[in-house]
View 1: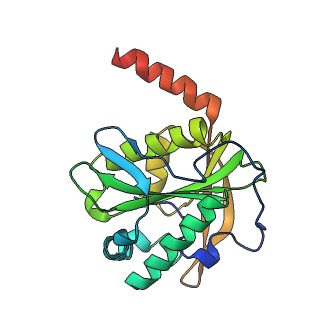
View 2: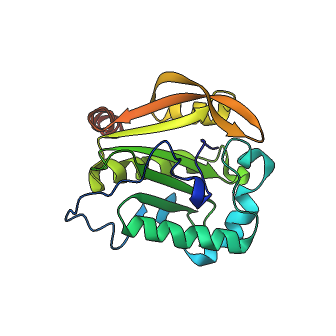
Length: 219
């Protein structure tokens, strides 16, 4: 279950999108990333101790197929985790560890990175260990990540890019209510091949309306 997120710090912000500083705000997630949980899964900041599990899970051929090449060593993931913390402190980037109930280490990640100086538009991506595909972990974690983006980080629009050939990733985005807006031709390079990508979006007001409907259905 994945979209074309990047786990290589050097590749996270491509040259066509220069780094931009977020204006100072009172938002405290830059100081400490909050923990979010719904009973099925917990989202928390990555820890150095997650590196080995992430290496085992995110370098699996089927998981890594549509993401930029992940680190290939425990030390590489440790450097990525340290970099993610620095970028979060700078207000440019957020990376959550996905921890299912009853577990302590990460089985996947959700990334959110700014696309404008105010962090009102952001790109998000996710990768989840293959063992946890089809278990409901993705949907539970995605809802927590989206809620954080809109209600805590103050983001207005979330964009995701998934290779058109990535049926599972596109299906996951559709199921959580994302809207497919366009096809980005030959926009993702992996193993010497360019892939078309689907551009998906979720807008804060639409998400809030959808949540109100879910709440009414539950009660």
